[in-house]
Amino acid sequence: MQFSDSASDPDQGSPAPAGEPLVPLLRVEQALSDPDALATWHAALSNALSADLPHDLLGLWLYPWSGGVALLGPEALTQDSLVVPLAAPQAQPGQLAIFEATIRRAGYKSVACTPIRSGRRDVGLLLAAALEPSRYDDTRLMTLEVVAQRLAPMLGRLARQWGATADTAPEVAHLEALVDAVAFAGTQSGTPQLYVAELGRALEPVLPHDLLELLVADAAGTRVYRLGEHTGGPLWGDPSLEIGLEYLDLDALFDGADRLVIADTYQDSRWPRGYFTVEEPAGAEPRAVVGARVHGARGLEAYLLAGSVSADFYDDADAALLARVAGLIAAQVSLLVSAATPAAAAPRVPTGPEPVSALDAAEQLATGIEFAQTTRRVADLAARFLPFDAMHFALRLSEGDRVVLLQPGESRALPDLPLVPVGGTALAAVLQGEIPNSFLLAEGEARLVVPLRVAGRVHGAMVLTARHPAILREVHLRPAQQLADVIAAHLELLRRTALLPPPYLPGWKKIR
Image (cartoon, rainbow, N blue to C red; front, top):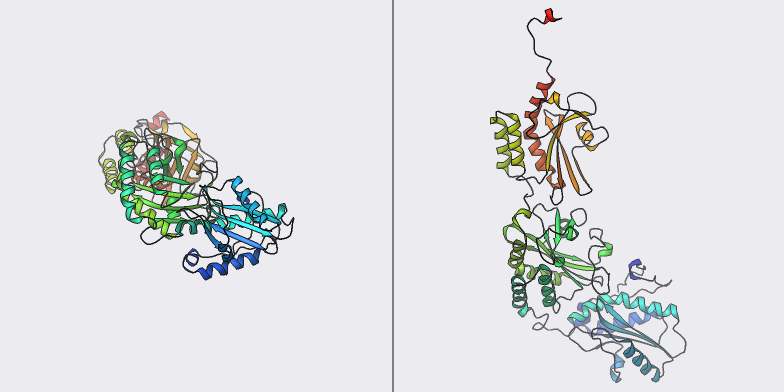
């Protein structure tokens, strides 16, 4: 029989007492289908706790999602007419006190009971009772609480499936019509936040959760936006609702699949801590997460995530269920996003440049007569597939750490431009070949640097800068390098012209 990890969890509050007993684990499928396996497991649980939590009676009850209470053990308690407190959705302290008093009247001198809580509701009740008095001091009461925490994920899953049949679990026959109707109503008359709230209410009976979030990705795949917190107005208008790729890489999290199950976010470094919290308990973070991709129209990609404050709460069946929901709401999410995204704020860049754009840039440079006008047209063309506010070309006219900075459309000759020292910067490192490229993000401004390469040598660099809300990111390094390779040869011709000696002047000997 398997046992749970006895290591204390720093995120669960008070540390576990020394010598904390291991808690045997039970597969939910066994508990539902095999009464003997359930009885054997309960006996193992009682034996495991006997040293640190002495007892003559260890009672365990389940609060099924369908309502009522079910005894998990010991079976002998079925002969008694115990009135067990009900959870609605939590058992009240007064009810628990009355229940403990009832056990004492039955002859037990020491009694302690604690609810087993999963998320916002109680899923079980654990009772320890001994015939001798004063058996449960603070340390043993803490042990009882820790055991309840260890049992919570398993009983949470068991409570959802207890008593279900193929026809009633979990009302799959009605799921499609239910979610479709809620999604349609939310798109017609509500903000994204209200839409997600309505969707959450519709999903709660079949997929319990403490958090439901709908994230939409930008076209470049460099950030996501929290629709579940968006109260209205243009999308991408609230920077606090954006999460960058460096904090939450959903492609890596889903690992190429359309479904996701995280047993414990506290043990998964890919999950960003501190970004998602639940209303109750206030400020708590989801421990278990289940997710599905939403593939919308025109390449829209979104992610539907449900979370529970209880670890190990979801399984593959929940992921399959959420994937069905994602398919149902894809069209509605596309409408919701398009209605809230102004044309000016729409992502301008695909994940890579269109081949025709690079070809057009090369053609402009090859056929242009006036270099200043040509570079200006090339910059305008580049803005169609690279999100930047400013473009500069840094060219070295001599050895050392000084360069001239040339803007598209610059009509002055290179020798007339000032030399700018760049020693110790990322630009200098790219020019020296110390690094292949550079991307920096500081104080809301992004700067991307790629080398200008000709015949294997670096003679300069192209520098792109962007301020919020532009979406210049590391993913643009490749298309920027392709553009730089197209421009490099033309800038090298300009640079070599500037390095030529002064032209021959007739009568120079006489002047001398």
